[in-house]
Length: 315
Ligand code: GRG
Image (cartoon, rainbow, N blue to C red; front, side):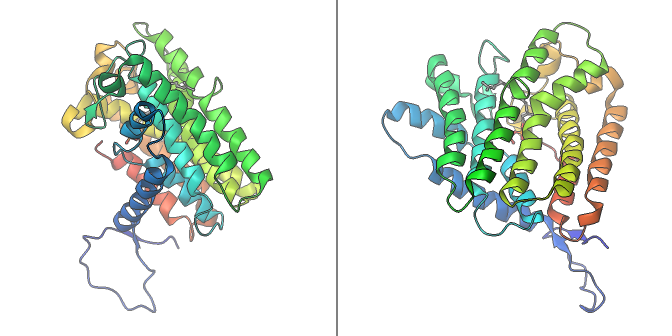
């Protein structure tokens, strides 16, 4: 039977230990994982020369955010039997790639946004050239974290992780998805193209998080295949919810400009299918994702709860 999920606020009387499955406290898990990631991110960048560059990198990397990508990486690492901090540099690398993509996405030549993670965007603070370079430096630092700053992990596993990160961040992933997204602005786009955009722009990096964590722990092919299915489901669901929140949430709560998709005349799931059907699809995808981990249900509580969090989040 799957571990029950509870939050720290639960006050129900504990059932006798002999019969009750131990409840998984997701709120406590998430907070502990977030603090662990924040400390590792802070330690990953010092203020070196030229200080203006490192300051711009640190500004965006340490600006908060849900830290979902590194947490997914660590959860997959643990599901695959990994122990200790071996996957922490990879988790940091994934957040660096994500942060780079946010900095570049906010640039005037792309989404042209002023607000990110509740603060002025990188180019608003440091200028356009510095923002481009801070993004470039975070992307390359991510590969440095894996290749040169992952003590205790075999070269063979690190090479596999480098491969995953390359696929996720390059033309087969983030960049390809972003290009089709930009080309689609102001046009009517069908569901297939929208799915392509979501799976590449957002899904590819989420897949890399889950697979890389598992690779560091030496996951076998069966678990990797299940994690691919899990990652596809949560990746698509994550972006559908992002589209929904763009319509339903405020800029204050999101920490970024709400209503952006409408202003940029983007095709989104809510635009194509309506809010209700979009949410139904996201719920269905999360159910499929969780189903894939059924054989590992006893150890998969964090990944199962993270999948639910993707559809229940408000930012
Ligand atoms: C230059 C190699 C290279 C790539 C950049 C700009 C770009 C190509 C891609 C854009 C990718 C992008 C911004 C996708 C959107 C993904 C998304 C839904 C981001 C929001 O993620 P959250 O909600 O944000 O997890 P926080 O702030 O919580 O981390």
